[in-house]
Length: 190
Length: 172
Image (cartoon, rainbow over all chains, first blue to last red; front, side, top):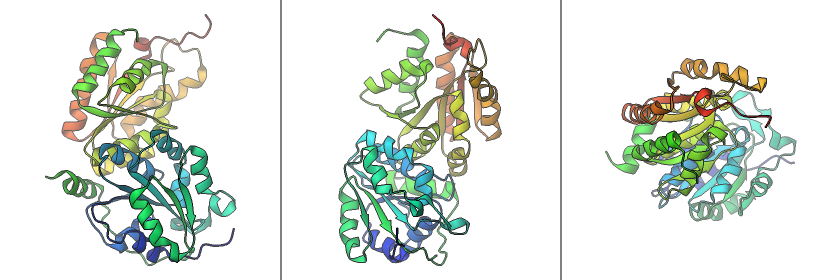
Protein backbone atom coordinates (compact mmCIF):
# COMPACT_ATOMS: atom_id res chain seq x y z
CA UNK A 1 0.00 0.00 0.00
CA UNK A 2 1.21 3.56 -0.66
CA UNK A 3 2.38 5.69 2.28
CA UNK A 4 -0.11 7.81 4.18
CA UNK A 5 0.09 11.53 3.48
CA UNK A 6 -1.48 13.23 6.49
CA UNK A 7 0.67 15.20 8.92
CA UNK A 8 0.11 13.48 12.26
CA UNK A 9 0.19 16.64 14.38
CA UNK A 10 -2.28 18.46 12.14
CA UNK A 11 -4.54 15.38 12.00
CA UNK A 12 -4.66 14.96 15.78
CA UNK A 13 -5.14 18.70 16.30
CA UNK A 14 -8.11 18.50 13.92
CA UNK A 15 -9.59 15.43 15.64
CA UNK A 16 -9.20 16.90 19.14
CA UNK A 17 -10.46 20.38 18.24
CA UNK A 18 -13.07 21.70 20.71
CA UNK A 19 -12.71 18.69 23.01
CA UNK A 20 -15.43 19.83 25.41
CA UNK A 21 -15.87 17.06 27.98
CA UNK A 22 -14.48 14.34 25.71
CA UNK A 23 -12.52 11.67 27.62
CA UNK A 24 -9.34 10.74 25.75
CA UNK A 25 -7.05 7.73 26.18
CA UNK A 26 -3.82 7.66 24.15
CA UNK A 27 -1.52 4.76 23.36
CA UNK A 28 2.18 4.87 24.12
CA UNK A 29 4.51 6.65 21.73
CA UNK A 30 3.48 9.06 19.01
CA UNK A 31 -0.19 9.47 19.83
CA UNK A 32 0.62 10.43 23.43
CA UNK A 33 2.92 13.19 22.10
CA UNK A 34 0.37 14.25 19.48
CA UNK A 35 -2.40 14.61 22.05
CA UNK A 36 -0.06 16.50 24.37
CA UNK A 37 0.85 18.82 21.50
CA UNK A 38 -2.83 19.41 20.74
CA UNK A 39 -3.28 20.72 24.29
CA UNK A 40 -2.71 18.99 27.61
CA UNK A 41 -5.87 18.63 29.72
CA UNK A 42 -6.75 16.49 32.73
CA UNK A 43 -9.32 14.52 30.73
CA UNK A 44 -6.47 13.12 28.61
CA UNK A 45 -5.08 9.87 30.01
CA UNK A 46 -1.74 9.20 28.35
CA UNK A 47 -0.24 5.74 28.32
CA UNK A 48 3.56 5.73 28.29
CA UNK A 49 3.85 1.95 28.50
CA UNK A 50 1.59 -1.09 28.90
CA UNK A 51 1.63 -1.47 25.11
CA UNK A 52 -1.65 -2.84 23.82
CA UNK A 53 -3.71 -1.37 26.67
CA UNK A 54 -5.24 1.74 25.10
CA UNK A 55 -8.42 0.31 23.60
CA UNK A 56 -9.20 -1.75 26.70
CA UNK A 57 -8.65 1.21 29.03
CA UNK A 58 -11.14 3.01 26.81
CA UNK A 59 -13.62 0.15 27.19
CA UNK A 60 -13.46 0.11 31.00
CA UNK A 61 -13.86 3.87 31.05
CA UNK A 62 -16.77 3.89 28.58
CA UNK A 63 -18.57 1.17 30.57
CA UNK A 64 -18.10 3.16 33.77
CA UNK A 65 -19.35 6.47 32.28
CA UNK A 66 -22.12 5.61 29.81
CA UNK A 67 -23.22 9.24 29.57
CA UNK A 68 -19.78 10.43 28.42
CA UNK A 69 -17.98 10.10 25.10
CA UNK A 70 -14.68 8.23 25.15
CA UNK A 71 -12.08 8.45 22.35
CA UNK A 72 -9.10 6.12 22.17
CA UNK A 73 -6.28 7.55 20.05
CA UNK A 74 -3.46 5.14 19.36
CA UNK A 75 -0.97 3.97 16.77
CA UNK A 76 -0.89 0.94 14.50
CA UNK A 77 1.82 -0.83 16.51
CA UNK A 78 0.01 -0.32 19.81
CA UNK A 79 -3.29 -1.51 18.34
CA UNK A 80 -1.63 -4.55 16.79
CA UNK A 81 -0.33 -5.64 20.20
CA UNK A 82 -3.88 -5.64 21.58
CA UNK A 83 -5.87 -6.77 18.53
CA UNK A 84 -8.07 -9.04 20.63
CA UNK A 85 -9.50 -5.91 22.23
CA UNK A 86 -11.33 -5.20 18.96
CA UNK A 87 -13.31 -8.43 19.47
CA UNK A 88 -13.80 -7.77 23.17
CA UNK A 89 -15.10 -4.23 22.56
CA UNK A 90 -17.38 -5.29 19.69
CA UNK A 91 -18.92 -7.95 21.94
CA UNK A 92 -19.95 -5.20 24.39
CA UNK A 93 -21.68 -3.12 21.68
CA UNK A 94 -21.22 0.20 23.48
CA UNK A 95 -22.55 3.42 21.93
CA UNK A 96 -20.10 5.83 23.61
CA UNK A 97 -16.65 4.51 22.63
CA UNK A 98 -14.71 5.29 19.46
CA UNK A 99 -11.19 4.22 18.50
CA UNK A 100 -8.96 6.09 16.05
CA UNK A 101 -5.69 4.49 14.96
CA UNK A 102 -3.01 6.72 13.49
CA UNK A 103 -1.48 4.37 10.97
CA UNK A 104 1.95 5.12 9.54
CA UNK A 105 2.84 1.47 8.99
CA UNK A 106 5.78 1.91 11.36
CA UNK A 107 6.95 1.16 14.86
CA UNK A 108 7.89 4.79 15.31
CA UNK A 109 9.46 4.63 18.76
CA UNK A 110 12.04 2.02 17.92
CA UNK A 111 13.52 3.02 14.59
CA UNK A 112 10.55 3.12 12.24
CA UNK A 113 10.59 -0.58 11.41
CA UNK A 114 7.73 -1.50 9.07
CA UNK A 115 4.68 -2.80 10.93
CA UNK A 116 2.10 -5.33 9.79
CA UNK A 117 -0.10 -2.61 8.33
CA UNK A 118 2.71 -1.86 5.86
CA UNK A 119 2.78 -5.55 5.03
CA UNK A 120 -0.88 -6.12 4.28
CA UNK A 121 -2.92 -5.91 7.50
CA UNK A 122 -5.99 -3.69 7.12
CA UNK A 123 -7.05 -2.69 10.63
CA UNK A 124 -10.46 -1.37 9.56
CA UNK A 125 -11.17 -4.76 7.96
CA UNK A 126 -9.99 -6.49 11.14
CA UNK A 127 -12.40 -4.35 13.17
CA UNK A 128 -15.27 -5.20 10.83
CA UNK A 129 -14.39 -8.85 11.08
CA UNK A 130 -14.46 -8.57 14.86
CA UNK A 131 -18.00 -7.25 14.71
CA UNK A 132 -17.63 -3.47 14.59
CA UNK A 133 -20.60 -2.20 12.60
CA UNK A 134 -18.84 1.02 11.67
CA UNK A 135 -15.24 1.14 10.54
CA UNK A 136 -13.56 3.49 8.10
CA UNK A 137 -10.22 4.61 6.73
CA UNK A 138 -9.43 8.30 6.26
CA UNK A 139 -6.53 9.45 4.12
CA UNK A 140 -7.40 13.03 3.12
CA UNK A 141 -7.17 16.19 5.22
CA UNK A 142 -10.55 17.28 3.89
CA UNK A 143 -12.21 14.31 5.58
CA UNK A 144 -10.88 15.00 9.07
CA UNK A 145 -13.64 17.36 10.18
CA UNK A 146 -16.29 14.82 9.24
CA UNK A 147 -14.28 12.17 11.10
CA UNK A 148 -14.02 14.42 14.17
CA UNK A 149 -17.79 14.66 14.31
CA UNK A 150 -18.29 10.94 13.78
CA UNK A 151 -15.79 10.08 16.53
CA UNK A 152 -17.78 12.29 18.93
CA UNK A 153 -21.11 10.67 18.08
CA UNK A 154 -20.69 7.10 16.88
CA UNK A 155 -19.20 3.80 18.03
CA UNK A 156 -16.66 4.07 15.22
CA UNK A 157 -13.32 2.42 14.51
CA UNK A 158 -11.25 4.67 12.26
CA UNK A 159 -7.86 4.29 10.64
CA UNK A 160 -6.16 7.61 9.89
CA UNK A 161 -3.40 7.20 7.31
CA UNK A 162 -0.58 9.48 8.41
CA UNK A 163 2.81 10.10 6.81
CA UNK A 164 5.74 8.22 8.34
CA UNK A 165 7.69 11.37 9.21
CA UNK A 166 8.35 11.80 12.93
CA UNK A 167 7.09 14.96 14.60
CA UNK A 168 9.14 16.88 17.19
CA UNK A 169 8.72 15.43 20.68
CA UNK A 170 6.15 17.19 22.84
CA UNK A 171 6.11 15.45 26.18
CA UNK A 172 2.97 15.63 28.32
CA UNK A 173 3.21 14.48 31.97
CA UNK A 174 4.34 10.87 32.35
CA UNK A 175 3.84 10.23 36.06
CA UNK A 176 1.07 7.62 36.02
CA UNK A 177 -0.18 8.47 39.49
CA UNK A 178 -0.45 12.16 38.58
CA UNK A 179 -2.28 11.35 35.34
CA UNK A 180 -4.65 8.99 37.16
CA UNK A 181 -5.47 11.34 40.01
CA UNK A 182 -6.00 14.45 37.90
CA UNK A 183 -8.20 12.49 35.48
CA UNK A 184 -10.42 11.17 38.26
CA UNK A 185 -10.57 14.57 39.94
CA UNK A 186 -11.69 16.20 36.68
CA UNK A 187 -14.27 13.49 36.03
CA UNK A 188 -15.52 12.59 39.49
CA UNK A 189 -14.63 15.60 41.63
CA UNK A 190 -12.26 15.68 44.61
CA UNK B 1 -28.39 -22.12 38.54
CA UNK B 2 -27.43 -24.75 41.10
CA UNK B 3 -26.46 -23.14 44.38
CA UNK B 4 -22.81 -23.52 45.20
CA UNK B 5 -21.79 -22.62 48.74
CA UNK B 6 -18.38 -20.99 48.69
CA UNK B 7 -18.61 -19.63 45.15
CA UNK B 8 -21.90 -17.91 45.94
CA UNK B 9 -20.32 -16.53 49.09
CA UNK B 10 -17.42 -15.14 47.01
CA UNK B 11 -19.91 -13.53 44.63
CA UNK B 12 -21.66 -11.88 47.56
CA UNK B 13 -18.29 -10.62 48.77
CA UNK B 14 -17.66 -9.04 45.36
CA UNK B 15 -21.11 -7.47 45.45
CA UNK B 16 -20.51 -6.07 48.93
CA UNK B 17 -17.22 -4.67 47.62
CA UNK B 18 -19.28 -2.79 44.98
CA UNK B 19 -17.58 -4.47 42.02
CA UNK B 20 -19.22 -3.24 38.81
CA UNK B 21 -17.08 -4.70 36.03
CA UNK B 22 -16.08 -8.37 35.86
CA UNK B 23 -13.49 -9.16 33.19
CA UNK B 24 -12.87 -12.84 32.63
CA UNK B 25 -11.24 -15.51 30.57
CA UNK B 26 -13.44 -18.51 31.33
CA UNK B 27 -12.32 -21.17 33.76
CA UNK B 28 -14.37 -24.05 35.08
CA UNK B 29 -13.49 -22.97 38.61
CA UNK B 30 -15.01 -19.53 37.96
CA UNK B 31 -18.07 -20.79 36.07
CA UNK B 32 -20.47 -20.00 38.87
CA UNK B 33 -19.11 -16.47 39.39
CA UNK B 34 -19.20 -15.78 35.66
CA UNK B 35 -22.81 -16.92 35.36
CA UNK B 36 -23.86 -14.87 38.38
CA UNK B 37 -22.02 -11.77 37.11
CA UNK B 38 -23.87 -12.02 33.79
CA UNK B 39 -27.17 -12.32 35.64
CA UNK B 40 -26.52 -9.37 37.98
CA UNK B 41 -28.09 -6.10 36.88
CA UNK B 42 -25.50 -3.95 38.67
CA UNK B 43 -22.55 -5.75 37.10
CA UNK B 44 -21.12 -5.87 33.62
CA UNK B 45 -19.41 -9.15 32.73
CA UNK B 46 -16.84 -8.72 29.97
CA UNK B 47 -15.47 -11.77 28.19
CA UNK B 48 -11.83 -11.22 27.21
CA UNK B 49 -9.68 -12.76 24.50
CA UNK B 50 -6.63 -12.73 26.78
CA UNK B 51 -6.09 -11.95 30.43
CA UNK B 52 -4.02 -8.80 30.04
CA UNK B 53 -7.04 -7.12 28.50
CA UNK B 54 -8.62 -7.43 31.94
CA UNK B 55 -5.80 -5.49 33.60
CA UNK B 56 -6.34 -2.61 31.18
CA UNK B 57 -10.14 -2.89 31.52
CA UNK B 58 -9.80 -2.56 35.30
CA UNK B 59 -7.64 0.54 34.91
CA UNK B 60 -10.20 2.15 32.62
CA UNK B 61 -13.01 1.21 34.98
CA UNK B 62 -11.16 2.83 37.88
CA UNK B 63 -10.51 6.00 35.88
CA UNK B 64 -14.25 6.19 35.32
CA UNK B 65 -15.17 5.55 38.95
CA UNK B 66 -16.01 1.83 38.73
CA UNK B 67 -14.44 -1.06 40.61
CA UNK B 68 -13.48 -4.12 38.58
CA UNK B 69 -12.25 -7.64 39.17
CA UNK B 70 -10.35 -9.95 36.83
CA UNK B 71 -11.22 -13.65 36.92
CA UNK B 72 -8.65 -15.97 35.40
CA UNK B 73 -6.86 -19.26 35.65
CA UNK B 74 -3.22 -19.53 36.75
CA UNK B 75 -2.13 -19.94 33.13
CA UNK B 76 -3.39 -16.39 32.51
CA UNK B 77 -1.10 -14.82 35.07
CA UNK B 78 1.81 -15.08 32.65
CA UNK B 79 -0.15 -13.13 30.05
CA UNK B 80 -0.62 -10.21 32.44
CA UNK B 81 2.94 -9.48 33.49
CA UNK B 82 3.87 -6.30 31.60
CA UNK B 83 0.30 -5.00 31.72
CA UNK B 84 0.58 -4.92 35.52
CA UNK B 85 2.88 -1.91 35.05
CA UNK B 86 -0.33 0.04 34.43
CA UNK B 87 -1.95 -0.21 37.90
CA UNK B 88 1.46 -0.29 39.58
CA UNK B 89 2.76 2.84 37.86
CA UNK B 90 -0.52 4.70 38.19
CA UNK B 91 -1.01 3.63 41.83
CA UNK B 92 -4.43 2.23 41.01
CA UNK B 93 -6.28 -0.57 42.79
CA UNK B 94 -6.33 -3.95 41.05
CA UNK B 95 -8.08 -7.13 42.13
CA UNK B 96 -7.78 -10.57 40.53
CA UNK B 97 -9.16 -13.97 41.51
CA UNK B 98 -6.99 -16.76 40.15
CA UNK B 99 -8.11 -20.39 40.04
CA UNK B 100 -5.04 -22.59 40.34
CA UNK B 101 -4.11 -25.40 38.00
CA UNK B 102 -1.07 -27.58 37.93
CA UNK B 103 -0.56 -27.82 41.67
CA UNK B 104 -2.72 -30.68 42.99
CA UNK B 105 -4.07 -33.76 41.26
CA UNK B 106 -3.28 -32.21 37.86
CA UNK B 107 -3.74 -34.50 34.89
CA UNK B 108 -2.43 -32.09 32.23
CA UNK B 109 1.31 -31.47 32.47
CA UNK B 110 1.00 -28.32 30.32
CA UNK B 111 -0.67 -26.60 33.29
CA UNK B 112 2.20 -27.27 35.67
CA UNK B 113 4.84 -24.66 34.70
CA UNK B 114 2.59 -21.59 34.96
CA UNK B 115 0.68 -23.03 37.91
CA UNK B 116 3.93 -23.41 39.75
CA UNK B 117 5.10 -19.91 38.82
CA UNK B 118 1.86 -17.92 39.14
CA UNK B 119 2.30 -16.84 42.76
CA UNK B 120 6.03 -15.97 42.50
CA UNK B 121 5.47 -14.12 39.20
CA UNK B 122 2.71 -11.98 40.71
CA UNK B 123 4.84 -11.30 43.78
CA UNK B 124 7.83 -10.39 41.59
CA UNK B 125 5.69 -7.74 39.91
CA UNK B 126 4.71 -6.25 43.27
CA UNK B 127 1.22 -7.73 43.45
CA UNK B 128 0.11 -8.72 46.97
CA UNK B 129 -0.78 -12.41 46.89
CA UNK B 130 -3.31 -14.08 49.16
CA UNK B 131 -4.26 -17.75 49.01
CA UNK B 132 -7.40 -19.72 49.83
CA UNK B 133 -7.05 -23.40 50.73
CA UNK B 134 -10.38 -24.03 52.50
CA UNK B 135 -13.91 -23.28 51.32
CA UNK B 136 -14.86 -21.60 54.61
CA UNK B 137 -12.08 -19.00 54.13
CA UNK B 138 -12.91 -18.03 50.54
CA UNK B 139 -15.42 -15.21 50.97
CA UNK B 140 -13.59 -13.61 53.88
CA UNK B 141 -10.28 -13.67 52.02
CA UNK B 142 -11.84 -12.11 48.91
CA UNK B 143 -13.57 -9.44 50.98
CA UNK B 144 -10.32 -8.60 52.74
CA UNK B 145 -8.43 -8.55 49.46
CA UNK B 146 -10.99 -6.21 47.87
CA UNK B 147 -10.80 -3.82 50.82
CA UNK B 148 -7.01 -3.88 50.67
CA UNK B 149 -6.97 -3.27 46.91
CA UNK B 150 -9.53 -0.49 46.74
CA UNK B 151 -8.90 1.28 50.05
CA UNK B 152 -5.12 1.18 49.85
CA UNK B 153 -4.88 1.43 46.03
CA UNK B 154 -2.65 -1.59 45.58
CA UNK B 155 -2.77 -4.64 43.29
CA UNK B 156 -3.98 -7.81 45.02
CA UNK B 157 -4.46 -11.34 43.69
CA UNK B 158 -6.29 -14.13 45.49
CA UNK B 159 -5.16 -17.60 44.48
CA UNK B 160 -7.91 -20.21 44.84
CA UNK B 161 -6.16 -23.52 45.44
CA UNK B 162 -6.75 -26.37 43.01
CA UNK B 163 -7.65 -28.58 45.94
CA UNK B 164 -10.49 -26.16 46.70
CA UNK B 165 -11.76 -26.11 43.12
CA UNK B 166 -11.32 -29.87 42.68
CA UNK B 167 -9.01 -31.46 40.16
CA UNK B 168 -10.46 -31.55 36.65
CA UNK B 169 -11.84 -34.97 35.81
CA UNK B 170 -10.48 -36.04 32.41
CA UNK B 171 -11.65 -39.64 32.20
CA UNK B 172 -15.15 -40.31 33.38
